[in-house]
Image (cartoon, one colour):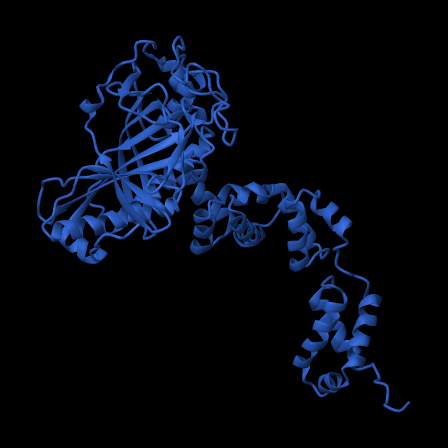
Length: 507
């Protein structure tokens, strides 16, 4: 995808003021779909989790998923929303190629949650309160897979396949009020806000919250207005952005693109846009419709909902510790510097580190392994780091390292065995024979052999050039197949250098 003309970001902010809005779609992790009994499972065979109701076939009548209502209320409460005493579903009509019933069951004028707010903290320390207009329930669409093109997107594809498994999965769409005054922080506000919503959904347990699986998706609305003007600019809506980094990049790109268009005397089209992760650009989708274009009308097959105030208050008591308070508590408990803690947060590994510490590991060791070797393996495999190994398994591995049973190098091999399903860390150590050689006798034999084979190095060590011991240490570690403690080998090399006698040539 060819990039449009872009204005320098700082220059764009000199000329225009960005106005933002975000619609975050949170896919709920109920066992069944929103209006039928089909399984709500990711990764099932195409079109296997379907029935007459979610396919819109004649005679299929919807029934509301009670657990989805409960999850929606809890999410709304955690976002500081008012819970409506009366709400109802409506039909949102237009052609959906990935929704067989050809309308979306959503909420229009009577959402279940409204008038909330979420306070976020940027890396600079700036505090921003994002006002939330509404959080309403709806069902998701199916998934299109485009075939024949080079990028897997609709542009250039020969044909598209439809998987209706996702059709009917319960969603909560969280819609913000306009966000003004964002200025240069606009891209970061987008990323941080979506991260905060995701963190809340995950803490509540109402969503698996895996953006790579589409559990959370963001539509980013961006418009620009000239400095000094009170008139709002025309907005674009970049649809279905599914990573935090991409939200930030998409907001920045749209600011730069729109600024270039406006500065050149052009106009912005009110439209949806697609985000292209590979090229870092947005492209035009369809003209953005207004609400009345969807011909909303009350869903005739579903009765209105009226959650009792007693039930709402019961659900309020189930809310977990607010994520911001939890972050401050954990950072203090772990003793992490700001950059160390931010590394854990940005890697989405706070839960994993917390669970590993609870299983007995030190906080620093847990952070090192999760953000280091495990993250590396996860990136190579294209999966989430916390899907590779259980916190208790990592805690057991760290215990073996700290007990001297394993070096870090050996521990990495053990970790690979654990991930491969070969058993617990202790079982992998046993089956692969990876424990550190702790027998000084075996080490001394290998050291003496290495010293005698390198008489020039031995002479340098005896002359006080202890750095020369590195060559011997390397030879010993190779002979021991890495199963030796390098620090202990060094100690023994320096000890043995004074007593080993090289064999004279000719004897």
